[in-house]
Amino acid sequence: MEDNFSNYFTETGKVAREYLETRLDLIKLQAAGKLSKALGLFFSLIMAFLLFFFVVVFLGMVLGFWIGERTGSMTLGFSCAAGFFIVLLLVIIFFRKGLIERPLANMLAAELVEEIEEMEEKIEERREEKRKASND
Image (tube, rainbow, N blue to C red):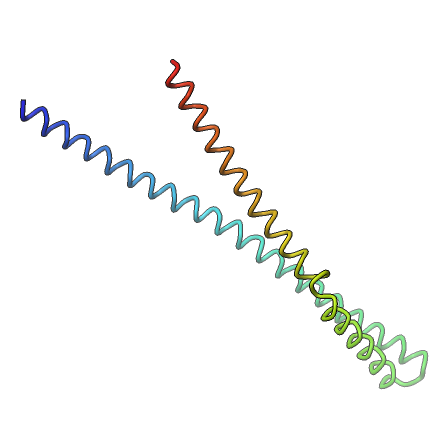
């Protein structure tokens, strides 16, 4: 009889250990998935900002050359273009909360809410499966 109890506890310990290892692996995979999703979002934002930067630089050059041709002085043309970008920078700094910070915060919050909702749906599905299994 003691062999049955020791055998039972040994087997239960093995199953519990395997369960914990599997659960830890699952948590690692879920964390890796969330990290990859966050990094993907981060790098896509970086690429969008780089593209926007190059567009602005080339538009500045076009504006400088255009004003330079109109006025007959490239110095004046590029000075006016630089002045325009300084004014644009001041506007962006002044309105940064509405133009940059809030939209980015809203986008990140929406991603987090979506992730939480997906997790809650999975939890609900598991509960539903457990209910069905207990009813059978």
